[in-house]
View 1 (spheres, rainbow over the protein chains, first blue to last red):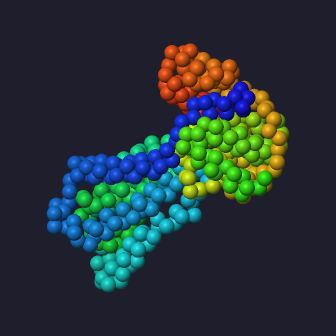
View 2 (cartoon, rainbow over the protein chains, first blue to last red):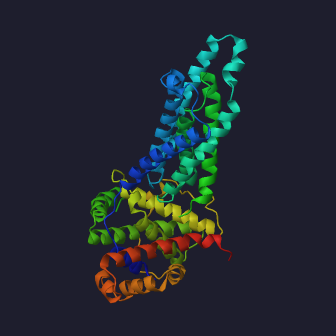
Length: 213
Length: 191
């Protein structure tokens, strides 16, 4: 087939194209993923016993904000990574900003507490649960974002995967904050950050192998 | 023509095409394919490949990808950068699949600005797209043959095959999607 034939064929079947669709479905997909993940957390793990009184306290809000800001930044970059020529890679470190703020807060909290409480502040009571649950629940948004990535044109699969991983971990953090009973800032800074990093790395490794177009 | 001039000329054309203007789309594809052919030829020559048919193969795959990814264009960004990023992706994919890693090819963002002038001869590609076409369901293939070879309009071809025009356009679009899938799966099969 000659290139001219191919062009004729593409022109003949041409129809108007909606360039905003990708952005719309990304946000819609993220909201859907958040709702589904939160419901799963509530159904499987249940809400933390004191959620009714605790949801307006700083630690719970901080957890949700950490997740929301990481997810928000990552979703913008994710959506842009599906559009060739935009190269959002250099903006990826922005997602570390919320994590850095939490880290500073954690250091301040530790510096104010006596050294014999540090261990309790860092390890809390359920650090293993956090480390397992956040990446596990992040698989729900990750699957949805993977489906979206296939509808875009990711020229850098690793970047798309990292953004998808970050966003999924952020959404899972918001969902898991409904259950997580550990409220200390150092706990948040260590275990949530580790969980988010793990999901990000997983996305960055898995997506390039699965995304071919 | 410099890249900036090309951008200035091409962007309004592509925006019109996105709004549904088929003539503008034709002009965009004709113009960008000349540019991309030059870019791909130069890049392939750097890896020691100068067969025109190979250039044409990668160009066709790139055009197919451009066509199927139109919705990924951000109207606020340069359309030439968008097209070149897709061409670069398809080129790297092609080199990897055909057993030569991109290696130290300078496939960075600046490279496409070097793409020189070139002729736009209608070259026959090798058999890649032909094989992809052969793998389509018969009904779609007949429809495509009618539009491609006999130069009939989609409306006429649709009437002849007893479909509505919209259905025919959708069928051709799905056919192109299947061909793109076929091409990108080649590397996964043995041989």
